[in-house]
Length: 258
Image (tube, rainbow, N blue to C red; front, side):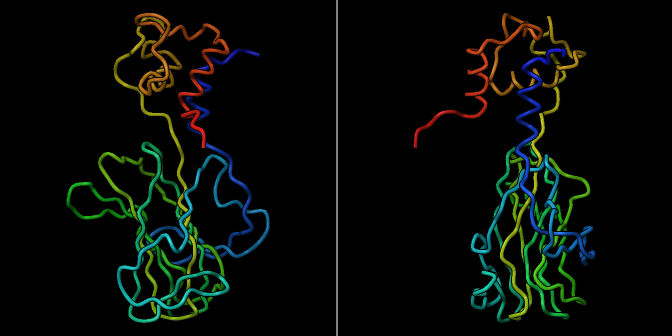
């Protein structure tokens, strides 16, 4: 078997992220909204995403009520519900810089054929300005009573997170009614290797045309390696256990005792 250079394994492996456990939900009907949302009911053998996605989970109590009057928490589902006017909830979203946002999942219980719970994902410049909808408001359906289910809203053109320029936040809207409540939001993202620069850090043996140029440059830009000599990376030389320990410990931020 051909030996794969360590730079490729480290950069590609760290970008892939962990695999997801299976979740007990199965596909159902499409829901209304600005994106291609899907409602799923409890079932067997369905994942909430692909095995290359990582997720951030926000529970109902992570959101702040910014409009309306809220009712008591549902004792069975731990869901939040609205008691008067239209309730709006807000939560900031923190994901790694450079990741792509893939999907938003909303866990809810809807027994109201007139109202619906809706969710949206926004980005906003760190300087004053309007917010931009990454996921326009998508709902559980006003003409349906899907019961307790999950709303899946995939992002057709996944944007790359830029935490230096933007902040990201979620909005949940719900009309009053004890038959409408929600308790959890999950956002899926995917880590990726940064784009290749225009010039090479190691022009002698990893020029811009080298098949591993992008991955070597990502390691160099992160500070994990300075190469083996001025202008050289030595991509075909074997890595010792000592060198590997430097790569992995630096990349994973090891080790701080509890």
